[in-house]
Length: 137
Image (cartoon, rainbow, N blue to C red; front, side, top):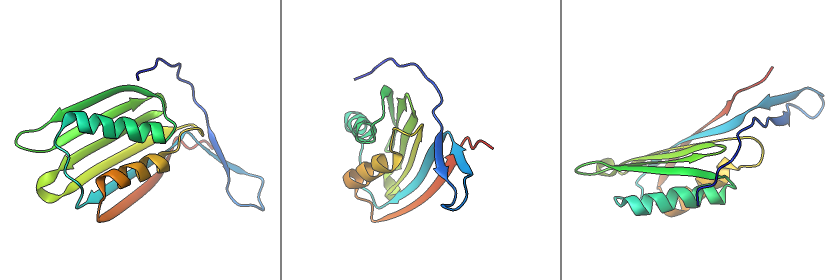
């Protein structure tokens, strides 16, 4: 499951507009999502499986998975990726999960990781913020 890899920067280059030759370059895409009324996860093994599944769905390379179970409820999980990270923090008492998906380079697909998480956690409402990280001039 855990694979050693060499880190290098791979820029994502997108045309800013079809009629202009200038390209926008950035290191990666960061998706920050608020999931409301989600399926409750209290088991660390289940959280690890969820994080690894989302990373694999996105085409990311898993380096390490960490979880922490709070008392009396709530869990935090982070999967470190060669391409950056995916993190989930839950508040079962209010049916909320804070989801953070950041991948760099143009191979990993953070949107697919987020779709995977949506499918498993089944939120009734989602608020998503998209950030382009490491923009080059």
